[in-house]
Amino acid sequence: MTTRTRLAIVLITAPILAFAVVGGLVGKTVTRQEAYPHLRVFDDVFSLTTGNYVEAVDVDRLMHGAMHGLAESLDADSAYLTPAEVKQVEAATDPGAADIGLDLTRQYYLRVVATRDNSPAARAGLRPGDYVRVIGKQPTREMSVWEGTRTLRGAAGTTVSLTVLRGNAAEPHVMEIAREILPPAPPTARMAGPAIGYVRVPEFTPTTAAAVRTAIGQLERSGAKALVIDLRGTSRGPMPLGIDAARIFVAAGTLALLDTRGATRQTVAAAAGDGAVTLPVAVLTDYGTAGAAEIFTAALTGNKRAETVGERTNGRAAQQRLFPLPDGSGMWMSYSWYLTPGGNPIHERGLQPDVAVAQPDVDFGVAPPPGDPTLDQAIERLKTRVAS
Image (cartoon, rainbow, N blue to C red; front, side):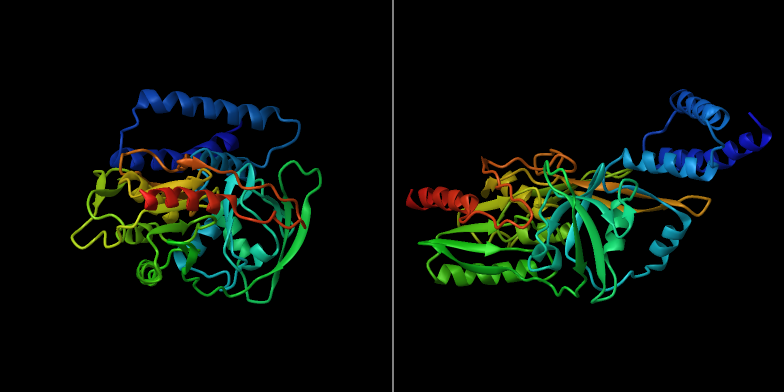
C-alpha cells in the first residue's frame, strides 16, 4: 500500500471513527474489540480494491459509495449527504415551492409510497408500489429518498421526467409531469350508507384534527352511528399530528411510545377531554398509509377503538435529522421512532390489517375496476356492529 493510499485511509476513516465515538457517548458504547475487527477488514478491502482492481480507483468515488451503502443499510429514510447537500440542509434552501404530490421510499430503486389526492402524480396514474428508476436523466439506484424528494420539487409550471416500472411489466413507462403548488388538502366527509359516515383524510396538517372533529359532528347530525376513516394513500404530515387526531377517539390509555437513542422511552397518553367521539370506527389502510397516518391507526387499534380493513401499511414511523461530519459531509439519519401502544415496532414493518382486502392491480392507461371492495367490506362490518 502506498503512502498516499494510507494517508487517504486515515483521512477518510477518521470521520467514521469520530462518528462512532460520538454515537458511543450517547448510546451503547462500541468496544474496541467490536469495532477494530471491522475497521481492519475495511482497511483490507480498501487496500485490495485500490491495489488490485483492473484500473486505477477514484478514492473519492469509492468512499462515497461506501458511505452511501452504510447509510442505505440502516433504513430507507437514512442517507449519506455530500458537503454540498449538507449546506442545503443547514441553509434550509428551498428547491422550489411546487411539487408533483409524490412520496417516495427506497427499495433498490426509489419507490412510490403514495400520491396525494388530486395531485399531478395522481392524475398521471402513478400508484403506491411503482418503482421510479430515473428522475430527469439521473438513475435512482444510488439516489437517496432525501435527494429524490428534492429533485421532484421546483418552480410551478416546470416539468420533471420520470421513468417508472410497475409490477412485472417488461418495459418502463416514461412520463412528463408538471409541478404545481399544492394547497393543504382538508378532510372530506359524506354518508357512505344508512347510519355509516365516511371521512377521507388525504394528509395530516395542523388543522386536520379540528376538521375531522367538525366533519364527524356533521355526520352524526345526518344520522351516522359508525364511521369509516379512509387513510389509503395518506402519507404526508408530521407524525405528532397523527396523535393529535387520535385524541378525538381515545379517551384513556397510551396513544404511542417514542424511542429516541440515548433517551428514556417516552409514553404519549390520552389526556382529560380526549375521546369525544365514541362511535365504532373502521380505518381503511394500504401500502400508501404511512407516517402520521400509521401513528393514528396504531393509536386507535391499540386501544380497541377501531379495526383496520385493507392492506399492510408502509412502515414509516421514524424521524430524521442531520449529523454533520468533520469533512463537511453528513448523515441524514433516523434518530427516533414511534411504536404502537403495545410497544411493537412500526418502522419498516407496518401494521397488518384486521381484515385483509387486496387492492386491484392496474396497468398504466387502464382505469381501475368499478367499485371499492375495501370500503364495502368496512361498511358491512360496521353495519353488524351498529345492529348489535
